Image (cartoon, rainbow, N blue to C red; front, side, top):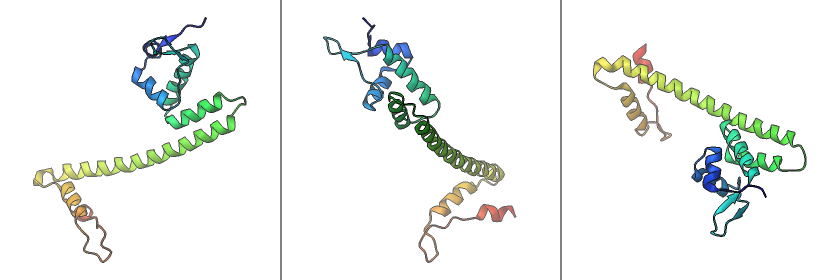
Amino acid sequence: MEPEYTIGELARAVEVPTSTLRYYERAGLLAPTGRTRGNYRVYDEPSIERLRFIRAARETGLTIQDIAALLNLRDGATAPCAEIQALIETRLTRVRGQLRDLGHVRRVLESSLALCRGSAATGRCEVLEDLNAAAQPSQTAGGGKKIREGSKKRQR
């Protein structure tokens, strides 16, 4: 007979909180292999392997949806290399976009920090002034917000 693990024992075996295991169950990534007479969840050895797979996939940045797709492909009868490649390419495209967005955020923060440091002696915060100006209704006919470029003018 194959060993059975309670949710607590399984959590300790793979070093994750039991709340994570319950989350994986709700997400459809993991299912108990049975119940005890007291209605506790029990799991088997393949459950440990499955959880290690899930953890490894999470550590590479894959989403729960990506992992669900991978598990479905892994558990299928054929080698799904093309589908896995497409999934990874899609995820990589998303990550590249996030990195591009983060690069923009980094540049804005660096610029704002330099502006703060440059105007610290004046007792005024040009970053706050710029943000306040950007939050004001535009005086243009379009009715949109107009972002002030005062910091660029002051640097000239």
